[in-house]
Length: 122
Image (cartoon, rainbow, N blue to C red):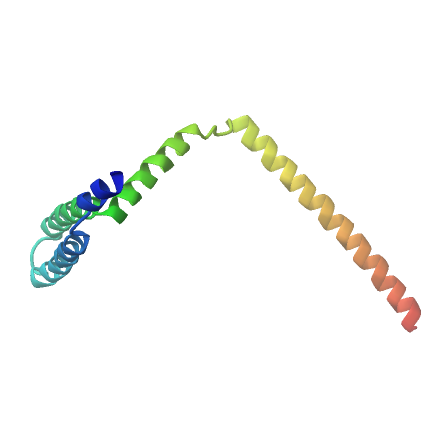
């Protein structure tokens, strides 16, 4: 039964996507046609058209999935625990120290192997 409801809800997706495409094409053409007008007015018009196109696209099955994904991403973003300034500085210092130690160790191994190669080759 729920499959029938879902199919009816997103029945004319192709028409909605056609409307979205027409809105985007109209916005591009309008921006070009009114290129002599103020940039502020053209940006406002583009934002309005983008909002309308986004609303129409959100009414499709793929658009609804994208909206659901965005809401889930926002929920997960709020769960992130960001480090404090002290934790960030300590972690950065640890990384720098480890990089320097590894650089010295690799330089020592390289020097040793170069010295051994020069002994063997004469």
